[in-house]
Structure formats: structure tokens, C-alpha cells
Amino acid sequence: MLTMIRAILCGVLLASFSSYLFAGGYHLPQASYANLGTAGAGDGVYRESSAAIWANPAIMSFMDRDIFTVNGLALNLSNTYYDHEDSDDNSRDSGGWLGAAGLFYNKTLNENWAAGVAFTTIGGAALDYGSGWKGSTQVVDTSLVTLQLNPSLSYKLNDKLSIAAGIQANYASIDMSSQLLGQPLSMTPTDDWAFGYNLGLVYQFNQDTIAGISYRSKLEHQFNDNVSYLNQNADYSMAIDAVAFARADVSHQLNQDWRLFSTLSWYQWSDFKSTELIIASSDQSITRNWQDTWAMAVGTDYQINQDWRIKFGFSYETSPLDDAQYQAPDLPVDRQIRYSVGLSTMINEVPVDFFYEYSDLGSPEVNQNQQVLPSKNLVGHFDMDMHFLGFAVSF
Image (cartoon, rainbow, N blue to C red):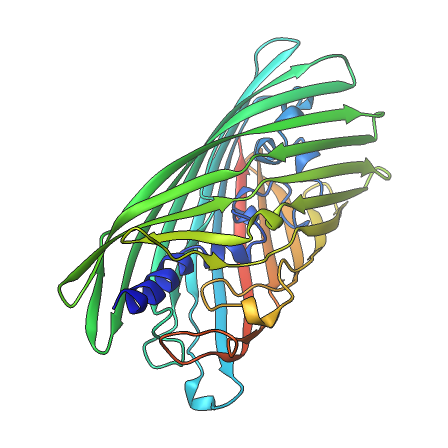
């Protein structure tokens, strides 16, 4: 019975973080985009939205004014399992529509110091594969809500260089449900706080070119609660980390109408070798064997006329896992390709941005034939993508 409870608990708990991880890190970067429509390219050195302080807080020292930015986002995740042995074992689309938002503010304190705060939804999930698919004893449905508060300070060393630091306070709440052989598997909703830091540096080469680097530390979430099935109870403890990552951004004003942006990002997914899970004092940790990933984003915006700017962006991120035997329905991952387009205008002298982004999340193969599971082993692949619609208003 312990083995059966362990299998279901692993699936349902870890599925909570699936769309979190689909985003290529322990966050949904689209919820904190600064330059909407460029696939995140150059966000850390973008000076027209205070959302840029989430990517790199040192940019505050180069902003011309105090800005309050509101981001709104709607996203649709599509994730379907296709079985290679029997199509009747396929899953339904486990995704659906979700909402996310962010509030950002920066303020110049004096000629050297600037302060800011970011309050944003950095991840979330609402997955439901249904009860009739082949892996139903591994994952059925789950939901996750996360929020992060990130205050920061920036110091301008001279006219060209600034440094910054911030504190990450991350909240996660999970609500889960499942069933086995028609009987409910009861799990008490649980939540947790995790804390970390972030650092940034920005250097302005000249009037047209500015660059920056930033780093966000690992966040360690520890979930502890109780699971019951057929009047049997077990305490569980699960550790899930948001890995550290770094980025480098560049923005260049090509001419009066054209601007170019680029970003190179690194995620330390090699820390994600396993998921620590203890049930009833028994170590049931899960092997992951992920590797570090790299992402490259490029974007541009063009002044169409005095009222409108149009933006385009493209991003490619490598896969954290290439071995099908370690793929699982809770965290199916592959390389990611993002295509983005956006528009900027002024409404009653208030800057407003809109964007659409399509994320191709790949078709990772899964082969569990080398594993001993208390259920049917999966041999197939997942098809995954996401659509994003968003806006930003800066005051």
C-alpha cells in the first residue's frame, strides 16, 4: 500500500509544478515581461517599464522617471499524451486557460540610490489528464498558485555603471485531488514560503548601447502534510527547488526608428538530479538527471508612426532532459521555441502595450519500460505548447 500511495503522491504533487517548469525555469517569464512582444529579449536593460527590475534591478539607476507598471496575462497550456502501443491509452488535453498578473514600481531616491519592488505571479498550474488514460495512477489533476515579492535597491557608481541587490520571498500553495480504483485519495492543501536573493549590474557604453547581467539564487520549497487512502494515513515531506539562473541583456538603438535586443540565459537544472520525497519516514526520492539549459532570445521594435511601435521576438531554449527513461507525466520537458509579437501605443498619454506569444514546448518521448511501477508503464510521447495574450500599462 505504501508503494501505491507513493506513486500517486509523487505524480500529483510534482504535477503541480509542471507548467512552472514548462516555462524553462521556476517561473513564468511572460508574467514579468518588460518589453512585451520581444520574447523577453533585452528585458533586463529596458527602461520604459518598471517590470524590467525583475529581470535586472540595476536598471533602476538608468530609468528617466518613477514608473508603476501593471502586467496582465492569459495563457493556454495544451499537453496531451499519445501512447505508442494503444491509442485507447491516450490522455485528453491536460491543460487549459490560466491567468497571471504582476505589479512593479521603481523610484529614484537621490542621484545615487533607487529602490523598487516587484509583486508577481511567477508560476502556476491547472492540469487534468482525466481518469481514463494509461498513466491515471501516476497523475490525474492538480492546481498550484505562486506569488513572489521582490524588493530591491540599486546604486549608481558613476554615469555608466550601476549595481543592485534584492530579496526574493516566494509563496506557493498546492491543492490536489486524485483517485485509485474508484476510491478518493485525500490530500490536505498545503503551502510554503521560500527565500532567496537576486543581484544585478548594468553598464551603459554610450547613448545607444546598454548591457547588463543578473543572477537569481535557488529557492528551496519544503512541503509537509498528510495523505490518506482507504483509512490508511502517511505523512510526507517533499523538497522542490527553483534552481538558480543568470542572464545577460543588451539593447542597441540602431537608428531613430529601430531598436535591437538580445538575451542569453543559463538555468542550473543540473541541481535537479532527483526529487527528495519521504513518506512515513521512508526515502522514496525520484531520479531526474536533468542538465543545465541555455536560452537565447533576440528581438526588435520599430516605430511605425508617432502613435505605434511594433515588436517581434524569438527565443530558443535547450532541453534539460534527453533520456526518455527519465521522462514522466508530472514533468515532461523538451527544448522550447517561442515566437512573439507586440504593439505599443499611448492612450490618454499613458503607455500601453499588448502582445501575443506562441511557445512550442516540443514532443518529448517517454519510455518507462525499465522502471518498476505499480501501474502501466508509459511508452509514448507528449505534445505540448502554450499560447499567451497579455498587456501592460505604465503610469
